[in-house]
Image (cartoon, rainbow, N blue to C red; front, top):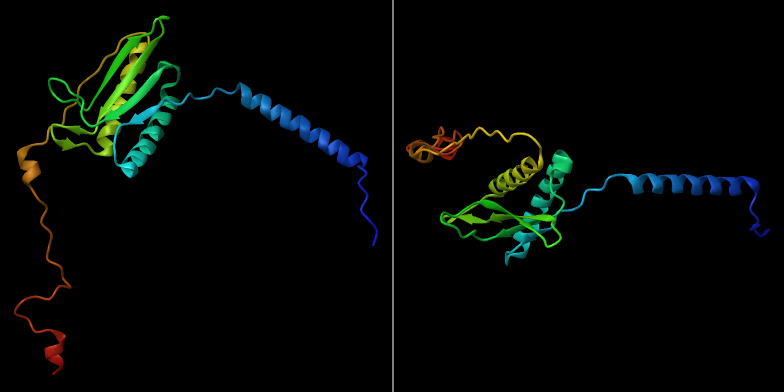
Length: 184
């Protein structure tokens, strides 16, 4: 059996040169594409599993909102999730805007896990986060910020009303003989 030659032929040299040129072009294109700066999210919570799941949901929503709002969001934002936001009335979320010594602004978005003793669901937290980020974007935008508040208050009747279902047709009924007694 003959040994394989290690010499390169013209075709393989040409293919390597073309591959290097294509790789360099792809790297150049990716270098100049706009990159989304990740907004840091810190969740102050002892339960590791809940913290990890909540962070994943919040990070996913923040990335989607960054794509939608684009350059309207300030560049320096931090999201902090904590058990309760102490205030006169407990808040589901708030935004604090500050200014550094070098005159650059930063924003701190705070979200609560609990309001007035009620644990907030993930959807309620995502709604509060979206509201805060949209508010920051509208602050940066030129023009007017016109809002029409829509409030949906749960009524006492709605929370006490329960849906009644028909009885299960396959469940044994009292006073009726089953198939065992008919076979005897």
